[in-house]
Amino acid sequence: MFFERPDSGEIAVLVHMEFHDQRESYGPEEFVELSISAGADPIAVVTGSRQRPDSRYFVGTGKLDEIKGIVDREGAEVVLFDHALSPSQERNLESILNCRVLDRTGLILDIFAQRARTHEGKLQVELAQLQHMSTRLIRGWTHLERQKGGIGMRGPGETQLETDRRLLRERIKAIQKRLDKVNAQRDQSRRARSRSAVPTVSLVGYTNAGKSTLFNRATGADVYAADQLFATLDPTLRRLDLEQIGTVVLADTVGFIRQLPHRLVKAFQATLKESSEADLLLHIVDAADLSRDENISEVESVLQEIGAEEVPTLKVFNKIDMLPTGEARIDRDPDGKPVRVWVSARDGVGIDLLQQAIAELLAEDVLNETLVLPNEYGRLRAMLFEQGAVRSERYDEFGQSILEVRLPKKDYLQILARAGMSEDQIEAA
Image (cartoon, rainbow, N blue to C red; front, side, top):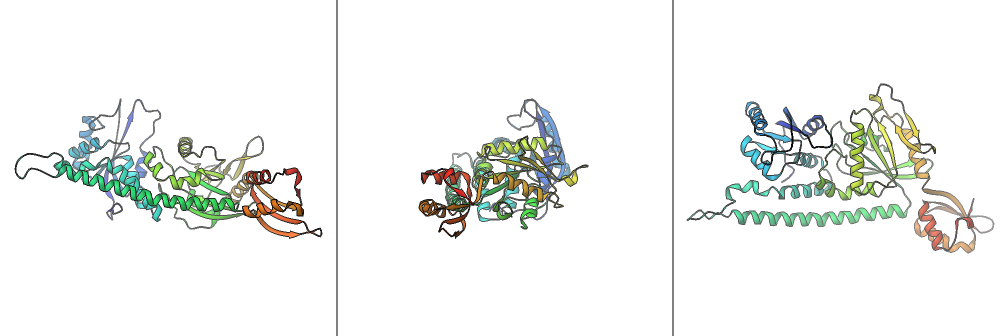
């Protein structure tokens, strides 16, 4: 029902307005890319500025006449607004323009509907679509919205609306129930990874920054990657073997975008949880994008919204092949800790430096040592095995256990505390 689309592109008129009270100004270029990603064929971009949006039509009557003239002349099938419209504004605009009107949220939802591949992704998109649609339900029943008197004029409008609202509520509840089940399965997988001391590294970043290309280059995976917005929607996990650390899990996630609709952030909470509960975030930045500083701010804002602002982050400036003097390198802070890595995922340049930086940052939080435990430390030995931290065990000539262990340092310290011991009592081989 929600995923059917015409085979060819749709002729679209794009509307981008600037308002005097908005905090920052940005052009319509990104919105043009968004519309093309959705399969639209933008025939014109209408721009303008106002003090504030008009309550009835969002734009003024003069601008509305200009849009209608283009729609009629070009035979446009849809008008796309680079803003959030109220249900009444959408309805009023459609009645004047005689074609479909879609706001920024509706357009992003449409792109997400096209990109979703997994069962979970489709559920998340449908949930967001239904929640968006529930506020606009009356639009399809305006001819029945009032019951009239007289024989044959007692329409079922209100009843039909109530029925539809009830069906929507039931569908939303059913999807939420299934997503809760998926969340539980994800939480179980995360707990299993935590027990086996496998660190998780999550890729985040502005859409089209090159996350999937980098993910494929680093792991040898074949995740779909394209030069378009929201090429990746469904989260993908792959293992990555680092020489100094061992196995880590790399997670590719959905890209962020300016004015990402809040209901989308909520719908994709399970997916984004991979980021908020990761051991390390790789913030992928398009180094060649003129708006890269603004894009970085947008990503940091969404990370704050999902509770991931405290997770250690390594910025990865990608696409250095598009810079005039781009070279692969690691930038470090005064303590020598990696803070930025410059790479080209497309050409594979700097990937070894990226892996080195990841290993350095994770090594700070992971204990990867050989411990010598006398027989009387049997309780500690059992607890390390229970944690899944022991990679191998052998015995020396005195019958002492020699354990190769790898686990997060915080977990190791907690185990020592439960065993009533301190780090000084443990001998490292």
